[in-house]
Length: 222
Image 1 (cartoon, helix red, strand yellow):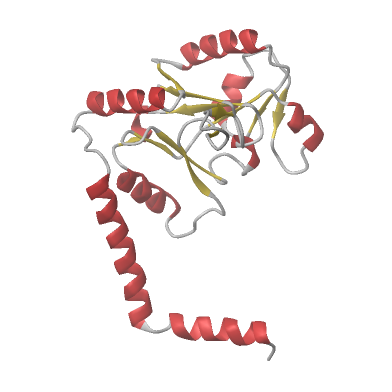
Image 2 (cartoon, rainbow, N blue to C red):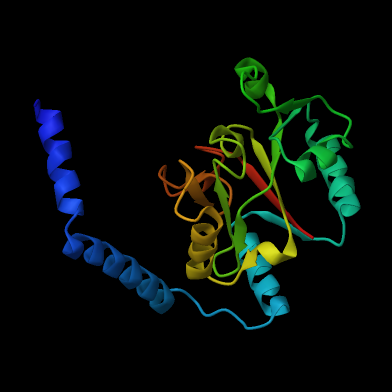
């Protein structure tokens, strides 16, 4: 057996011991408890949670719209499209995002197997769904399963997220529990908490948006 095989065999043997599994579960419980202690409280009602998410999103320089229908989503996106002079839009296989993209009058690149990477790099924006929103932090939770891949929420300069009211999770712990329940142990290769547009303040402490990802993040909740 080579060195790699020896190491893997040792790991597999260690994971069979109940004490290791118990330590893992205990660590998860400790993390959840720590999150509860250090994060701000969240109101009990939906309106309180909505107000908190709006406040957090605005402080993070994200744009947030609570709307009543997909018609309102489309109308707002059309205004953004014209203002930014979009050329094309990327999306993923999803009935909701496709129905919206088909109404904005632009070339649509659907990220299915074998899509044209060169065309993807030219897209002005991406339109995706998400796993949930987090009122406590103003975060958007996405995964490689919910958005059809990793790059779609990172590469285009403007990321548009479409979420439904029932996807507004109160706290970080609730969001983690929701994701865990949704995938039932079969987690996708990537789960990400997006908290505002990409930013850095490394150079002379000046905030720069879009340094390592989208410059703009727009969230719709209906």
